[in-house]
Length: 130
Image (cartoon, rainbow, N blue to C red; front, side, top):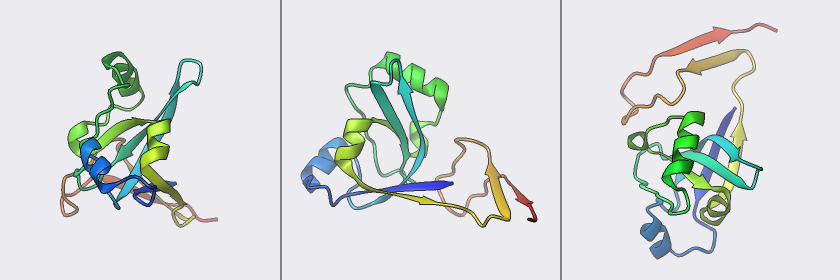
């Protein structure tokens, strides 16, 4: 599944988006979601494909960040950032879930991205006939 999300159209001002370093009216990908502890701490790993966003959240302490890195070590330099579920709901207005053609699978090494769409990424393509 490919999961995308978009910022904007949430009633949040452009100034606030700028203050929290999330690009407004922009498409992002959702890499994973995870809960820590007793499910009360929920987080989403979001990736800005253009690396415009530089989001940091004070409530995500270094201790929490270390636990989240064990789930997915995506590097901030790739445009990926963890955001708490309440903040995600504040800054992102939609989630889109897409699927591949059911006969094709594109498998990539987890959390490996490039800064440009013209740089190659090693992928493996499988055709699975019905």
